[in-house]
Image (cartoon, rainbow, N blue to C red; front, top):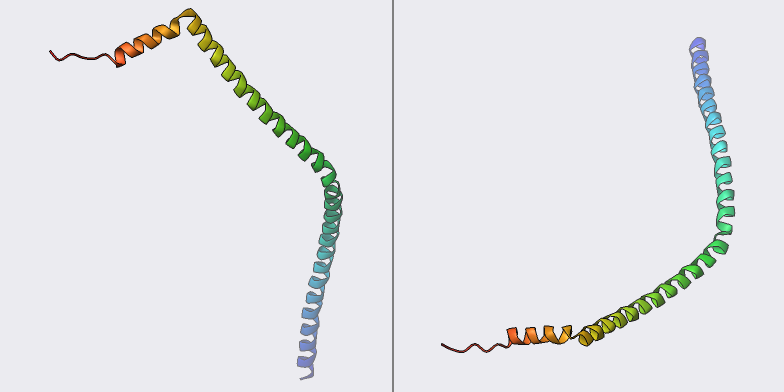
Length: 115
């Protein structure tokens, strides 16, 4: 009976030692993970700390570019209208516009006589 008790105690001690070893290894791994996460947090803090300083001028530049683009679109629209007007004036001056109107009116409004 004494041998049985000693063997059981040794088995329990061996199992507890294995569990203690696994916990010790897990603690080391968790300590390294904690160090890495702390380093990442510090790095992210320093990166994001200066982000507003960099983003704000970029936002202002983007706003200025959008305004300039709208202004250029407006100027382009005006230029297109002016070019259309000049083209119309040139065709009227050369008589092409009147000829094309005459052709259209004679084709579209031609009265067909019943035969």
